[in-house]
Image (cartoon, rainbow, N blue to C red):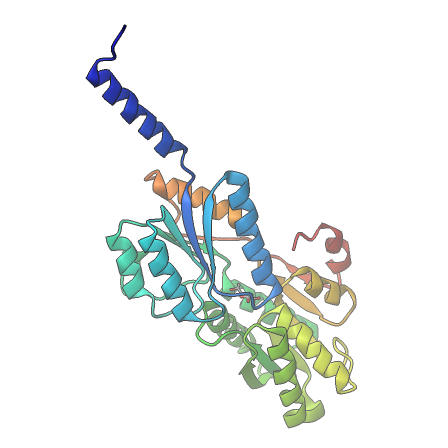
Length: 313
Ligand code: GYE
């Protein structure tokens, strides 16, 4: 009988273990903000579908609009020794302690969608998302052209403290500052939600009555909620009140085609493929772009109907 020398057995065992290890799927933890909007639903879907396609073991956590839930998810990802963490941060600040823990555990963090403010830029590998400043600027420029630089504006802000709410507000304010005839007369948060948009618009209408010329909404969901409030008040959205918003989700672009929203600036949520390519590159020790932005366009009466059949979200 032939016996296997002990060293050969050892080699075989290790070889087998190594093969098993390399075949093990990549384990990625994704801390999502919540499920506040159609944009968010499309973003979660893109992350999940692409993970399944690539055989990635995705640990998906819905933060339900609470930063403490997201921080808890990150801690649990660290405890589970995931290969990488993807974070879509609800708000800009307050992430440093948990990011420091991830760094100590040797787990790279990729920030997606919304940017963060940190005292230590080495706490995350890179950022992937949209340029919210550019979006706010595009909305302001389009509006100035459409209205000839005149009108009283109410603003529906996104989630307080979030990068898109902060940046879209600031960029829009800077954009209209060149037009003294354009004035923001009121600005409140609708938390990026349809219900929030409806409630706050009702309050705006009650408070200001018919003097509102323009609505600037930080996302389509709030604009769609506001449209309900405007119609219930007996006014015509898109005509009596010019509406400009952001995201260009299918229902938003449809509302533009229907003449109820006048313009929506695109914010592409479909970055699953880009995120996983980047995670792979980071794990392979390659240098990646520090901040990478999706390219966004704008939809108004001139191009919305034609764009609808091709709309992916
Ligand atoms: O515009 C909004 C969502 O962070 C870009 O969050 C995202 C924003 C998006 O709830 O609809």
